[in-house]
Image 1 (cartoon, rainbow, N blue to C red):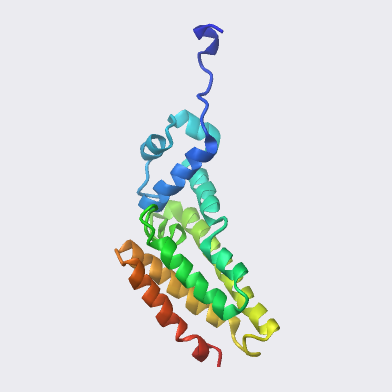
Image 2 (cartoon, one colour):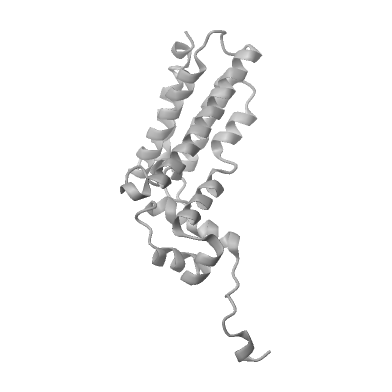
Length: 201
């Protein structure tokens, strides 16, 4: 095929790889801190290819958030452990490892991706808030399952317990981004679990 015949054809690229690179960039720099030029450089594609494949920066961010949220340490811990207490402890410790992993940006993208910003980007902040609400609901459901299974006392306010440990996770994410070590985050997780019995009253 001649060069003339191929002119104008879109450049082919690995969409999944490009998305993974966008996840890392948004995770590291946040939504407003990441430009289209940053994204195209990291993803290895030209701007027209980015728009053709993902629609817009905001649509790319939404897809990146969904990709990040899949198979999270929280979901794995809540599904893996036999009791609610063990599940919550595993959730905290697994995320302590994840938040401090030097192979990835520090902290949690869902907490740090767009905590503040200009009014025109309120939809981005709401998208992250929605994912955090979903995670909170899964945590509440796991505690309610513990009530049903008998390893959490009947009458426990599952929403309050879930809200407490969700807040601990958010704080651990911020501490990780501030440079807290893995050991420091695990110490916070251990301290938070000492509150378990009191929360069940």
